[in-house]
Length: 113
DNA sequence: AGTAAGGCGGGCA
DNA sequence: GTGCCCGCCTTAC
View 1 (cartoon, helix red, strand yellow):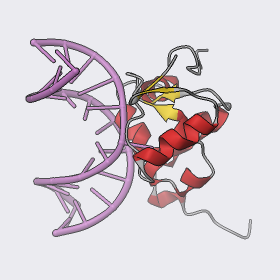
View 2: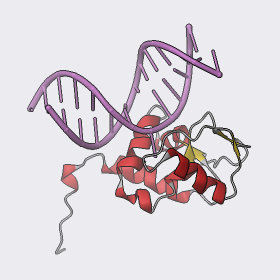
View 3: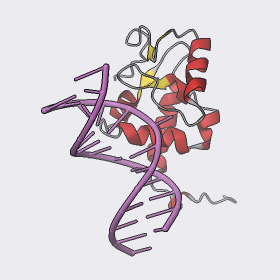
View 4: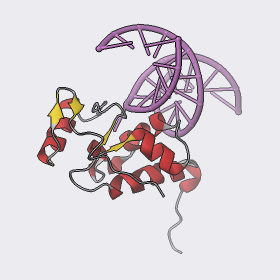
């Protein structure tokens, strides 16, 4: 009780927290989509906001946000570098087909329930 | 304090 | 496959 958290400045902290929480849940060799994360948190339309949460958060370095891809299978964007993202995924065993993930739907991390 | 623009997307035409 | 619009969050002016 010595330190007081200044969460008052960011009411949406909950949102970011949820995203990071789910992102961290992803295992190696598996990927997820922004929509799934948004849907898992109750806001399927906030897919964009999900990406923002990962991007904005400094936890970007401790969260496998690179394992999150678009629902189309394309890597999407990446603040640290589009190429970098693919590189990391490939290193995890994920195959790529051009600009899209191979067997994308097969390695998709399913939250559901 | 309010408004405008940007962003790692998704869905539809 | 491409293009446009929408909806959600954050940041800047």
